[in-house]
Image (cartoon, rainbow, N blue to C red):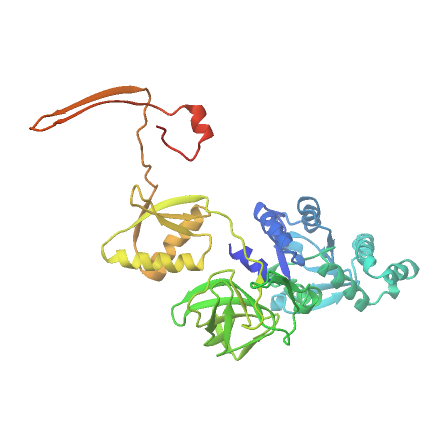
Amino acid sequence: VEVERSLRVLDGLLSLFCAVSGVEPQSETVWRQANKYKVPRIGFVNKMDRSGADFLNVVKQVREMLGAKAVPLQLPIGSEESFKGVVDLITMKAIVWNDADKGMTFTEVPIPDDMKDEVDQYRQELVEAVAEYDDKLLEKFFEDPNSITEEEMHEAIRKATIDISIIPMMCGSSFKNKGVQAALDAVVRYLPGPKDIEAITGTNPDTGEEVVRHADPKEPFSALAFKIMTDPFVGRLAFFRAYSGRLDSGSYVLNTRTGKNERISRIMQMHANKQNPVDFIEAGDIGAAVGFKDIKTGDTLCHEDHPIVLEAMTFPEPVIAIAIEPKTQADVDKMGMAIAKLVEEDPTLRVNTDEETGQTILRGMGELHLEIIIDRMRREFKVEVNQGAPQVAYKEAFNTTVQHREVLKKQSGGRGKFADIMFELGPIDADWKEANPDKHYQF
């Protein structure tokens, strides 16, 4: 769920692949989620120094298994333990990282003779892949390949990446700090900024008409709350992505789900677990706000005079359930409070009390998911719980039809009372049950 709601608000993505394992099942899941939200991405093949590493094989897997047009921007020099550098297919230069400073610096060297044919082949593939965005680029390539400037290549690759027509592929070893700087440069150079993506669309909650908002600080404010977190020091933190306008600390914002205005007491920009207070957030920024009394994941925040409802976030239904109970009497109240906060943070976590067994049932996306929730209850909320499989409430049903007769005679002066009752009980006819699925009995 963390990946799902992050992709909903991201403009670009750096997708990591293992040079040995290649495209794994989870890679396919995340890739489909990125396709769902149309997120431009760059591929980075990591662990090139490991035994069995094969950059071009991973590129092939991305093409065949993910259906993407993966285009290498680099070719590795050496592999496995001998991996020492790359050939840049844009600058047509080879670089070798210096092991003395753990890859912080590099040295330009001539392209190895045994790689020249391969380099020319993949350089041509790169130019052809991006040529549809610049016809002059293709003409230059056939007339004089050396006449193509680096800026022309960068611009064409950027356009193709933003359009998700190609997936630029790079390689390196993050453990040894090889290729990391080039990957970060590619993120800045090729992935889109807020103004490069399409305008966000929503609906007016009052009229139902479509509303369009551009990534412009001058337009009315609109944002999507994509994560709720409880901080032990500041309380409830609402993470949101601003799509248009500007939000100042201390101002009011409309939550279109509740229809209420709420005051934002503080705004922060998050860097891992560090909180940096800021005075305002503008279109394209991601921030966290303190002060919301009622907010949920997927809520739209906007200007009171210009309401809009953005596309809601969808989450899968839980697939597994366990029963939990507090270990001690002291844990009873704390467990309820802990569950309430965890459910507020995680929209895929559900809790309910079984009316028939009285058990508290916790539902999630898998065994690991629920194990993490139990561990968080213990670490963050100091709550110890017993867990087990939910009880099954067994019920009895008739197998055969039976008849019974009761006779009542009561004479105590006057008219007296008399009743003769005969009734029959038995299983419902299968055809009638199929025709009346909502009824459980028939007279």
